[in-house]
Structures are given as C-alpha cells and as structure tokens.
Image (cartoon, rainbow, N blue to C red; front, top):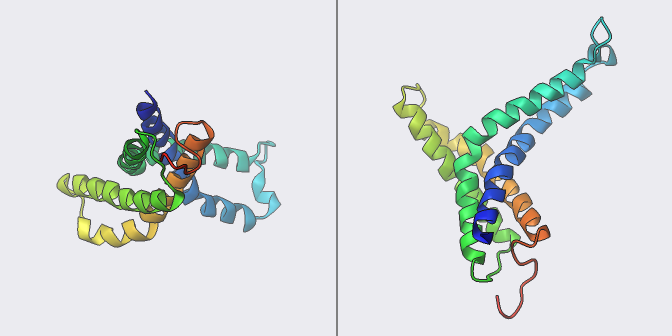
Length: 161
C-alpha cells in the first residue's frame, strides 16, 4: 500500500509542480513588467486574477502530458528503493528526476514524431536537457520532501537503512 502511495504522490503532484516551476518566470515577468492600469478591465474586473486562473488551467492540463511519464518513473524508483525500509537522499532523487525527465520527454517526442510532427526526437533532445531535466529534478525533490513529511519514506538514514 505504501509503495502505491509513494508512486501516486509523485504521479499526481510531480507534473503540476514542474509545470508551475516552468510557467512561474513568465507569470512573474508579466506582472512585473506591466503597469497597474493593465491589471483591471474597464468594467472593474481584475485581469491578473483571470490570467492566473488561466495559468493554473494550462498547468493542470498540459503538465501531465509532459511530465506524467517522468513523474511515474521517478516515483517508481523512490518506492522501489524504499520498499524494504531503504533510504533515498535528495541528491539521488535530483539525479533520478533529471534522468526521468529526459526519458519521459524522449518518449513523448517519439510519440509526437511518429504521429507526424515535423521536429525529430534528436532536435528535441537539447530542449529536454535544458528544461525538462531540471524540472524533473526539482519536482522529484519536492515530492520526496512531501513523502518524508507524510511518513511514506524514511526521513533520516539509520543503521538499518
């Protein structure tokens, strides 16, 4: 049961965390570089709140497409390593999350290429290393911290693990 909860934690929370981290600089930039008069509609509605709501909708939909496989792979690895009481450190999850981010998006790239997309998996490979590997690594670390907080995995290394 604990094995499944760890995988589910990574699978359900990893992609939105990565999507949020990916979109955050754009949202902050649009807020910082806009004037306060751009924040309201003529009828009094608040533009910035609608933009943020749209942002969360986009993250909710697309993050699972881009990060679902990576989150599943990272969660599966953490659950497997800790299934017998083992310990997983943040450095390990940083590396595994980055590798899973690249593998997951390589799979997505291959699927899109076979479906007739114009870009090849080789041209997407740089994009995967620059964007998806760090997002997978950071999302994995946040999910591991949450799993530790929930008591699903060991928080400290002991002699037994």
